[in-house]
Image 1 (cartoon, rainbow, N blue to C red):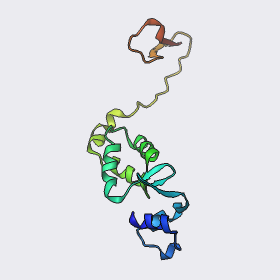
Image 2: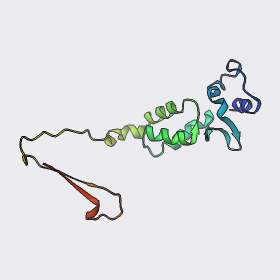
Image 3: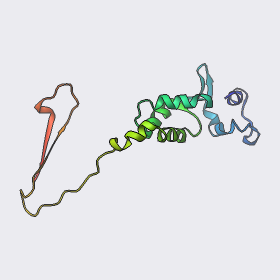
Image 4: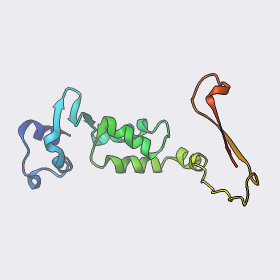
Length: 145
């Protein structure tokens, strides 16, 4: 990150003349700036390589999956290949692998269409609002005939 900081403060050379460690930041050089918190890109902290694993661990502590972890990561942090790193980290998570099948949504099965009215009756209840107390008024009854 020292190389990136050097170029932010002193100007960027041609891409071929910059060090290999700095080249991944070449495409966003116009949007990088330094602050007391560190290097910032589009309002997000640029994370040095040595801290990325710890950041990934903290982002995934809730085990909400790849998409949720990527959204959270992109909100606060930046580094080259951030999405790929999040995907790799989450896909290797033993806890997520163990419970992945249990958290999958049930597949929808199209019901058999009856030949006449009232031959088959199906009903379903579901909650409209998440509340501490439940009442009759916050439920919906669906009936298909």
